[in-house]
Amino acid sequence: MKDNIRIAAGQGFWGDLLDAPVRQVEEGPIDYLMLDYLAEVTMSIMQKQRTRDPAAGYARDFVPLMKQILPACVERNIRVVANAGGVNVEGCAQAVREVARELGLEGKLRIGIVTGDDIMSRIDDLLERGIELKNMDTDEPLSTVRNQIQSANAYLGAWPMVEALNAGVQVVITGRATDTGLTLAPMIHEFGWAEDDWNRLAAGTIAGHIIECGAQSSGGNCQYDWRKIPDLANVGFPIADASPDGTFVITKHSGTGGCVNIPAVKEQLVYEMGNPREYITPDCIADFTTVRLEDAGPDRVRVFGVQGRPATDSLKVSISYSAGFKAVGTLVYSWPDAYEKARSADQILRARLEKLGLKFDQVLTEFVGVNATHGGLAGEPACDLPEVQLRVGVRGEDQGAVERFTKEIAPLILTGPPGVTGFAGGRPKVEEIVAYWPALIPKKEIKTRVEVLNV
Image (cartoon, rainbow, N blue to C red; front, side):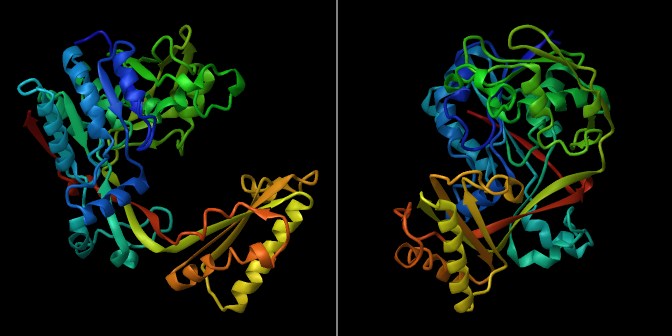
């Protein structure tokens, strides 16, 4: 058993800094590189991509990244754990395999594939057997939107990834796994934690939660004294330096920008936390009220005292479904009387939409520069603002009505209040709305599969 392992976060979402994983590999010692690509909406995007192209459906950025870092990872024995597989884990793994062969790594690399999260093809069978997959927020049965479903994936925990690591793979590729499991799995593998060692499993879960959003725990998007956070252009991504007893230190590579301090870690801890006493994952329930933090030196925060409880008998399922159409149009009104002009334009637009008999589920107006962030809490502006952006969005089931709305924005330029600009982008674009349906499924219904590919 190792005395400690260093798990580096390289991506907080699909679209994060492309060079962050490279810098994590090149700028200091690490044992694992954790890459988190998936969000709820990402799965539906990938499902659409695969519908158009059976070879697609995974995080495309992952493959060129692996081409860039694989030689160093093999040379330094850095293992990669990523949920880049999306809805096509096998395709993603094969693409990485081809890249590894191009790099001459035959016989030097093994790739682990974890599948079993995708239940899209099983929806009808599950519903017929009385597993309703009710919406966790509304309690509606999934049958109410059955024909609109685009993707359905259960959140897998750490243990299938542990199985892959135990098989000696250097790269683990999964589909919809929990963000925290990507960090917890290496700890379980290296330290030999038991499936019922709830406190340590909870500690590893907390470590994963802190680093899952990349630089958000090392100075990025940090409210505390944000003006004094150094060199965000060169921000260092976080590293969990973990010990067998479940304690760990959050840090980053020396010489990088950003900061790791108690306020930054606290801000990330409360991110998407929910009930602080019951942070539920497939692996355990972590009690955030037991987390203790202490300053362990420059850019080092020690985390200890974490307690956990047994996992539940369910897994969360992320389901996406079509929910109509939307379009958003904008115009910018200039001083003098910018806010008044924007409000007048909104009233004119709404009157024209009503005259046309267009029906929408919602019409939302925001005045950017006045109330787009805080809504009604913003109050009235204290001065005559130099400019205000009018932003109007509509949503509804009638695609034709949404389409017609897009043609009513531009006419305001010559038939509405004066001093308008910001219309060079042309007509708004009609977009399909992809809605999120959270549900629970009994764990016994999900059978995971681990496969090992030799390069």
